[in-house]
Length: 456
Ligand SMILES: [Zn+2]
Image (tube, rainbow, N blue to C red; front, side, top):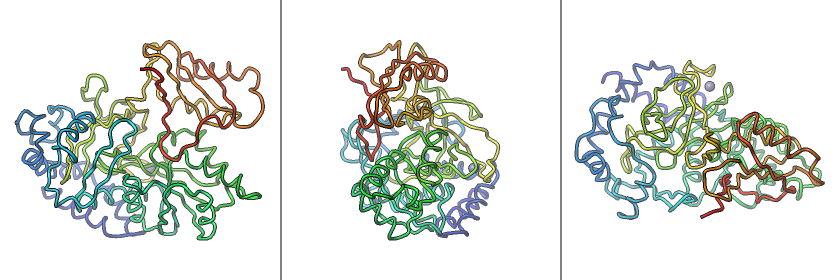
């Protein structure tokens, strides 16, 4: 308990300071011993387990009215909860579901998820939930290199989604000057970047392609790298740990690309980022989120060891409005080296291998879009854009991949065979590749759905 309180006091200080002070305290927090962190987590769980049991009808039902274990390390005895459960709960008890554990008077912010994979979800946050969300998100942005010296333009949709106002507030926690821009009006964005001397951008990884096209079409004589952007902060889509994709962004824009924004919308908007030394995602929310890795099929827990792959499961250690316990993120991750990073971070580091619902099984091999992206990005005559187009329900013998040429002209002889051979070599499955003319795929500012299931 003693360590728990000390730890929390330090966390509170982190939340109300800015700039370089903040960074040194952030370092201090993550230099804290595993023992201190464990005691802090346990202290929060003691309160949270009672709170959830008393106020969440959803979890009481899931737990058959029995109290959850007192020790955090024993929570694997509890059943997992998932997105489908939350959806059902919101349908039956609109608008927040019966996992709302606080009175609606305590809700100070409402977000909605985009609902690209189903119905839109309503996310409720108390003032304290917002504070924790912004503190942890701010750590991620700082870890990714955002400083008080930056002028960062935030180009995610501000209408209701977490990525808008909440991510904006996490950017502010770094001490940087934050310009709220939102989406659309790309020509105005280019002019704004030049007029204000903006040197960092926060957007989805697919947005620079849109921006690049506008610079080339509407600003003759101007090259993307002339805009002077030094840092690109991305989130919302995987792919940022692919070296070829990063190299392409660096080459075109001259900025350092970082994934600064990994989150799970129902849990927390942003709790992991890349640093300047290492491209794996650093988990920066361990004082409020308890992570587990489970087998995506059986749900059985797997040890937190380097090289272990499985679905990320998260438990809120403190959450007022919609606390979640053992919630399946749907993201398949692989844990990296557990030694401290060269940047000083001591917590978990991981890579997102893919979404459990984006996984395509080809002759028993699990294939994720990020693996296909890595191959596609190796070919300079391809744009980097691609789709996995499934025309038939599983089982799949072949991986059908549609790719797009980077420039005009005919498909070079032998290109299809080369790409198919490279997919076979690096992923281990046979592919059927179709090469399309440049510009065949619609460019989106939001999330791009890479796997198309064109069957019913
Ligand atoms: Zn690091």
